[in-house]
Image (tube, helix red, strand yellow):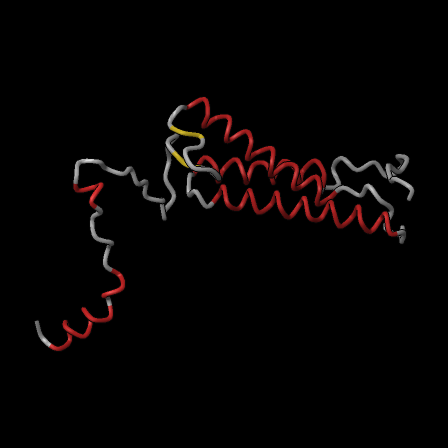
Length: 153
């Protein structure tokens, strides 16, 4: 080993895998799943929680529906105007703050689901945001002459 290799080796000492435990060496093995760091296709994914949805296709489909609905609701909350903009009461401020908090929390859940790097999850998240924006954010469904749906506070 020359000086360059030895210097590199000393800098990488903290990067070594932990030694095998006595339980692992006595025949008991621990199951470790590697997290994907690139996009992949497939139904065997972990989305948001450990072992969820598991390796069953039906649970994977349910997880995709859940992510789609989350993204759709995020868009609804982003574009809904349930309280008049000129409302300045404390109650109106608290309701706006609560709606913002829920919207951001749901948006983070969608982001974390996409971080599973599963292509199906990515596509349904984009689809949920797209359809939600189409229904609530675009002017296609806006009726300019309709009565306002604001809550008066």
